[in-house]
Length: 314
Length: 313
Image (cartoon, rainbow over all chains, first blue to last red; front, top):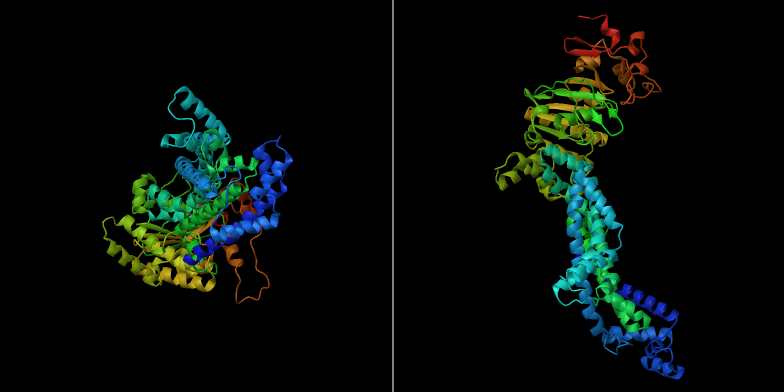
């Protein structure tokens, strides 16, 4: 098992090289340069060139890439932002903490809202207790996240004045953004839980459990749910993976200084160091989240555990 | 009787079976004849939304199971009536150790039993079905098909039931393992004095294992009696005769087997007369018009017009 974890973590190294190369390439073939963005359209070309040279932006692509890698590996130096001249790490890290906090809260909330009705509707299939929640879930899943955000802003900030509308300083600041990013995935998680639960309760081993004389509650919780949760965990892990890449819409709407809005903002300024560091950090976190999902899988399902410990050879 | 949105399918009709303590009744029939449905009805485990028992009685020690409420039924399930399912590959929960799955059945019906005692019981029962007790910490995927079926049987026998329903317990296994599992079931039945309902489509198994036989066709029991009555008796339902003819015989040099022509009728659209009439080689006029009554001689029961007039006692 440890071997498996180490192997997966070692895969991070080629991932980081690959991600940084792609970002470098894309930044290089898209038009624009940081100096022009900083100095404005009317600045003389000579000044722009001088600033680009000062920032190190005018070096050839391959040379820039390898210098970057060298600094990153040997000196753990991710460079300075072209735009703010601050150390990249100092700028990206605090914002990333906020993003992770928001993402975790969002995923936790979406599971809490999504999973229980998913189980319930599956158990009560074809009754009114199935139809009503399912229809509501379909409806919610069809509404984009920003609609909820705007609605909540309008009601709770503008009309009732209960919650702050921007920033991320206190816990109250997180309520509305978390809800905004949690509701659409919650509807998805619910539908997912329902379908996988419906499949689980029709399995032969559930019938075996009933034939043992187990109560309906034990059948659902002990036998069906654990098996039904496997696909749900994948779904939840995926939405966590998406959320840690930054919830740009929610961040913009509630003016939260997260990583998503940071990267989107700095693309305009061609702020390569920030974009690179941000993306690398995201890819590291994404890998870790996916690893965590796989480990949870192994924790629940002994068949998968066996596969990991034998290195996939059965 | 199954009920779906589209149509009502009467999967099993008008059947009557008796299993006596210490004896084994074999329920034989083609795929889709309603054998499993019959078994599930006894435990009242028909799928809740689609399956329903419209009328009848299921008596167990003089008690009508259909009149019990769900809680009382749970006390009987697994404890006094236990069931071994058809497919051992899918009948065990993949995320629980086999020991826990057996222990669950024991704990459910022996509420106050201390933990050590339960564990000892689990080890005993594993030993009884021929699995090393140390293997109780393993998961189903670590067992072979035959071993899994042993585990399923261990679960069923863990509370020493009075009636064991075995639904094609060997169909999913290969022949050598089949013999082992059958021997084991027989041995355990004799040791525990359990009554057994053995569902199968294999007449060989019936001959080896059962005392009584009931032949099921399209949801009806068309012939029933002791093994001798049905296997060697002079009177036979044409369908039973057909079943025997479709078996390979070592003594005759026939190149081809003689299958029964045609298919079983669609249970949502049963023929008006005898259910077997469309495929029957000995059909007479009345067969298409009227359902045959069952004729009984000693323990041998037959539903066929051929015998109706001869022995209308």
